[in-house]
Structures are given as structure tokens and as C-alpha cells.
Image 1 (cartoon, rainbow over the protein chains, first blue to last red):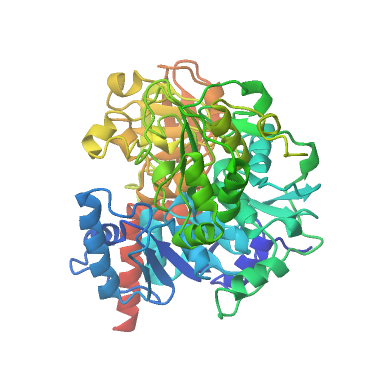
Image 2: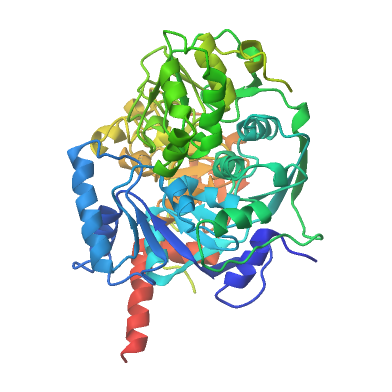
Length: 428
Length: 177
């Protein structure tokens, strides 16, 4: 019997040196352990609790532990600035080689921008969206703070090898990003816990056509449907993306034709409508037509889900010669400086600012109640990661999640609308 | 290896129940960005689902919830325990909430079917050693899922940080006999 991608990677990484099957509980060797802002205080406190008052005695490999001072740049408060100072001290003391300190952005995007995630790797890190490196054929997930410290010290961690759900994507690639509609549609149809504890493996003829940006969105959202891992096969596009960023070796890992799946889902994207997740659940999904006419106060494009070039490009393409509705705050935050620069060079920023968009520094701020708070009764439509109650401030505010095209359509119309009604040039 | 009785898994928990639905998210459990002072944040835990909960919860109460408990950001269930809850038992746990609960050795249990045997404010008993959750008011019960041995060892150590210390010290002792 053949193996899925996770079974192959865990078979190679198993400390016990034996091939594994779904359901096995193993200790596995890690290729990369990732920390983010707050690293210094986290590791100091843990070291103290462990009885090392001078600090953690080591990391397993200073080349394979990385720290990104991400999420919020520039520091949003003195408390964060103080925390960053401790992070710098700990990075220096432990000799950590991969440290990104003074660039704004989302750590996950910056890590991929730098070619640190590669096919066949096993990666853990703090932050739930560590899962997103599955886009690059890496097996990657988040671990709790304490577990990541165990991982940093020993370069190993326990895992339950998950069963795998195969999601086969078929149909035609439209000329706008479609990943958000795909994952929301799946969450609506199968429930926002359909991947609970399992791995999702994407397959099918549409996958090779999906851009890396689109794959990153789908992998990133694996966590919103409960999955441990969300992984793409390694194809020529993956290899080109990684080769352009890294000269390190990697192991493309694709499933065997007779691999065993716990569930197989086939989705023809030609048949899915534009969808939104209504408040306050990722799986509370409806066709956009059902909520068309809902007046909005704020629209957002950004986050590790949809803060990439193609997400911002579609907004600029649609806003060329159009205006954001006067009462709408349309906020865009690129996922990293590299993405921001790409947008600037392509002239997107000028178009968007002329149309009435406000840009926010790359990072996680717009996906959390850090910038762009919502008041009681306000409505926001967003391509960010989550719409849980209170995610943007008031418990009486409402957040709809949608793809960047649908968000842009709402920003122009001032209310939720089918993109085809606002932008006649969009055809499906 | 047998578990020392000190493991939080081996204690019997009896308490009045608060029932919650599916996909209880960590923005609701730990509204960290809205209340940066931890003590203040604890007072608001789960209010996005049941506004009366943090005001009326009593020491020793038990939280029962549906599927996908703790979905969302990587935040432990600390606020729920800090306001007096003695244990949490759910239909299923989001993968990261499992790691966060085990890592801090919080008594969080998985019992598929649990929401169908209890109603709000009934009293239940969580008996991990015997693998059952009992409704003491109705006598109905469901099976508790047994954790893998690695998870039981982490609980027995008192969480992932003490477990990490144990392994490190064992390795050092082997190196310098």
C-alpha cells in the first residue's frame, strides 16, 4: 500500500527510523523551528521554569531555529518594544543565525520569501498559520509555546501521523484569485471542522495552474477547517519558486498513486458561486447573492491568507478608473515588504491610493484588533483569516470573509455585492 | 510506564456544567488583544458565546463543548481555568488547542457524544482512569478518549516544560556519568 505525503515525510523523519502509517505516534526530527515576536520573553520565562536562570542552555542547531520579529512593526507600544529588546538579546546569546528583526511583515510570508521553507521539510512554529508552508510541499504545523521550546532544544517533537483527506480540484482557472472561494465553499459544505486533526492533500488538474500565492492561501486556511497539515504536491512551479530563493537541497515529496485516504473530495471550481462566510464562523458560508445589499463600513485585503501580490493586483485592476464608496474604509496591508515592493513596481499602489484605499504597513495588524477596530453595529468585509466574534473589537460588530475580488466589489458598491454586478468585465 | 497519581488526568472531577456549542474559538476564550492585562482578560473569557458565563461561573464548574473546541489562534485555555473552571470536556479538540492544553497540563478531555448526555447546570463526573463521563443527575454516560502514552507522560510530568527539563537532565546525566 502506498503512502500519502505526510506518511512519506514522517517515515523519513521518524526518530525510530521506521516507516510510518496514519495513526502512528512518533517522535520526529525537525528541519526548522520557527519563532516570532515575543520570542525573548517566551524563552526566558520557560528557561526559568525549567531551572535554568541564565536562560535556555542551547538550541539544537542555530541554523535551523529562526526568529522573525513580525506581527506588529513598527512596535505598537512600549511593551512590544521592550519585548523586542529581550528577543534580540536571546537571539544573540543562543547564536541563532536566521533572525529577521527590522522589517515589517507577516513571519510566514517572510519565511517563504527567504526560501527557508522547502519541499519535503518538517517544520513547526508558534502561530497557528505555520501550516501555510504546506503550499511549498513542506509538512508544517503550529505547536504550543512550550512544545516549540522542546522542539528548539532537541530538534524533535511528537506527532500523531494524521489520516489524509484528498481534495481534487478541477475546472477552469478564472482571471482572479479563487482560493478563498474554494476553501470557504468547502467549509460551508463539509463544516468548518471537516479536517479535524487530519492532513489535507490538494490534487487534481487545477492545482498545477494555481499560482504559488493561491496555494499559500489554501494551505494557510487549512487551520480554519481544523487540519493539522494542508499540503500541495511539488511540481515545476514549486521548484522554480524555491530555486529562485534558495540554493539549499530539498526533497520533492508526492503521494503514491495507491496512497490511502480517509476521505476524497472532488470540487469543480466552475460550479461554485462567489461565497462569503457570514458572522461569526468560518463555516457559516452563503453565496454572495444571499447577503447582497448588506451595507459595509470597512473592507480589508491582507493577512497570511490573502495579502499577496495577486490579491492586491485584482483590487487594483478593478479599481482602475473607479472609486471606493465614500463611506467605506478600504484598508490594504501587503503580507511582506517583498510583496509591497512587487506591488509598488507594478504601479498597483498608485492606482489603489488614487481610488481611495488606505495602505497599512505589512504585518498582522489588520487581521486582529490592533488597527482598524470596529464599533458596535459596524460591518466589515475582509479577505483576512478569521471572522470570530470580537476579532476586530466590538462583540456587536459583524465580519464577513470573502475573496479579494468580492471585497473590492463591496468597497466600490458600499455594500456586499456579486462582483459581476459591480465589475461587468468579470466573467465566469 | 505507569502514571503517577499526581497527573491531572487521574483526578476525578465533579462539577456543575456549562454547555457550549461547536467551534468555540480562541478569540472568545482568550480575548488577548482586547484586554492586554491578563487579569482583566480572564473576566471576559467566553463572553462572546455566553455573556453571563464569566459573571456567574463558580469554582469547580465544568465546561462542556462541542466539536472543534479551541479553533483559531494559538492561545491556551488558561482564562477558563483562572476563573475557576475545574475541567473541560469536549466532543473534539482543535489540534493546536490539544497541544496547548497538554503542554500546560490542563485537565481537558475528549468524549465524543458528551454534549448529548448533559444539559446546562446538571452535574457530571469526569473519570479518566475508568474512561467515562457520567451525568450524575441522569445516570447517562459516554466514553472518554484515552490519550496516547506520550501525552499521558507529559501530563504526569506536569506539562511540556517540566517534561523538557526531565529529558534534558537525563541526557546530561548520560553524558557525564
